[in-house]
Amino acid sequence: MIELRTNIDTHLGLILTPRIDLSLKILAMNITEIEQQLKSVAESNPIVKIEDDIKVSKETYRDEKIKEIDESFKEYFNHDQESVSDIIEATTSKEDSLQESLLSQLTFEIDLDDKDLNIAKEIIYNINEKGFLDTTINEIASKTNSSLERVEFIRKQIIRLEPIGCATLNTKEFILLQAEEEGIETDKIKTVIDVMDNTGKPNLEKIKERTGFNDDEFRDILNTLKSFLLYPLENYYSPKQTDFIEPDVYVKKINGKLIATVEDKILSHITIDEEMLNEYLKNSDAKRFIEEKYKEIKELIIAISQRNKTLLKTVNVILEKQNQFFEDGTIKPLTRKEIAKILGFNVSTITRAVSNKYMLFEGKIIPLSKFFSSGVSEEISKDYVKSIIKDMINKEDKTQPLSDDQIKAKLEKMGIKLTRRTITKYRKELNIPSSRERKCQGTL
Image (cartoon, rainbow, N blue to C red; front, side, top):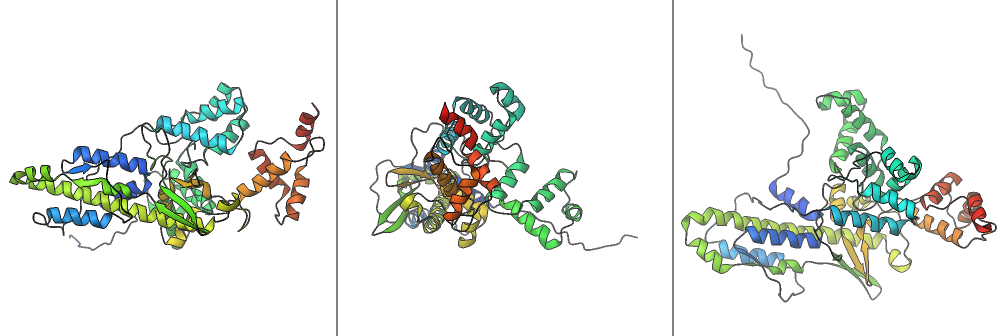
């Protein structure tokens, strides 16, 4: 006998509509990449023109442009339909600009001698199209005649540059790095990933059972994992040829207050080719084609406008939290997770918003990633402490260099309490020899 049953099958999943998918891609782009995207769209969309010389007003252009396009098309189309995006993906090469960017950032962060520079180049030039290291630590050590420890030290510096995670070994390391950067406990995440690796066919119920976590714990971990990128270059776009960095954000100090503006004049350059439009409208068979092209440009304008708003909100929080940086260069502890919580966004949204973007302040170009730093306390960042340690050693008596214990004591007098092991770790990250080695160098 056939038995009829009603079963409810529940599973976790993420569905991206075309609009959301486009918005995420645009959010991760900087202003140069958006300009390239618009040019690509203009080449494939016969009714769109990108004007080069247009006087730019101070107003936002989204509403005006949407209204202009709506008025041009309102006689012909039903706008209640689901918007569909047919945006062409950027196909520009990433290799040269990515490699140069990583090397430039690395030499800015730490001092490299010729041997370290060779190691760095060997690592960076072996990063594949996803951002992972495409060779082994042993091979690099052998090729550069270096120790495994030194190669790993340089690699650890590179993976924290922008875009974060370049030169990680695999997805697992990249995910754990993202969790660490956001101040998230990694033990439970690591447990879930390990179980997934050892489970043949994905089965969430079986994975949860093997981890031993309850429903709430497991759901929270899955939600956290969904917010992470799967590989370092997932949302990285780079121009094929970049002669200079064009800032996305401009910050000025007016009457003692930091004011941020986001570059949005690009929207004023989008115009409708009325002559071409009229030619197409003479042909009734071209109606559907023109309708799709109208939706395409409208969706793109909305996505760019939303990206600008998200970026501006993010930068305003950065200015509030890192106000002291604009006075004396001090970076306070700040994570993308903290900004996401303040704005009510997902962490991945903030990651995309700041990725590969730059700020212009008093003639200086500053990567937005610079403002994120793990901290030793709520008010003191790791980078700030490392700068103090470096300054102490630069000013020390070269015949009687400071030991790590002496540095620890000096920091405590400044109200900064750290273990000697932590100070030793920071000193090594700065590529500074021990006091005994420095003393020997000073006597030569």
